[in-house]
Length: 215
Image (cartoon, rainbow, N blue to C red):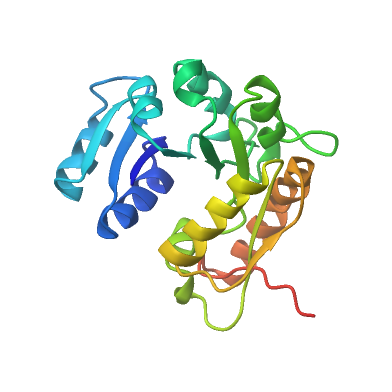
């Protein structure tokens, strides 16, 4: 499958590398066609990897990942053609974290709204599914690194899109437990889990952990 990834940071690169390992064609997108991080990644990742602008990435991907920082997401999507975004599944991994006042960060949107909802409102024909934002990127693509049962949460308005994302999570990344929380408004709780995740990271001294719902 052709997969487009918005964002050239560690999250986008790690997801992209894993997808290339699985045999998918991956394009890493940024604001510039000559982004040096993206070029270096594509060279390392091999023949199935490429890089380009956000517009190139939207056109290329059959499925899209949003791995841009939360504060940069909406402007990043503005670079892409609406025709190249509409009706595609967009897996929104980003969190609306603001580090401008130091650490711990604040959320730029919470309680009554979420980043995923903002994307869905502005681009009503994109099939937005929030997923993978409640863990470190190494756990996203290698869930077996956390011992014992643990969960990945998803939410979104489009049932077929959520079925596609569930397939990606279970068949590509080998997740055992995918919990569908419901419509896109549930992204509020998923994004607001980040302050708790950051507190746990500091307390545990590691990124390799995750949430599990015991029933």
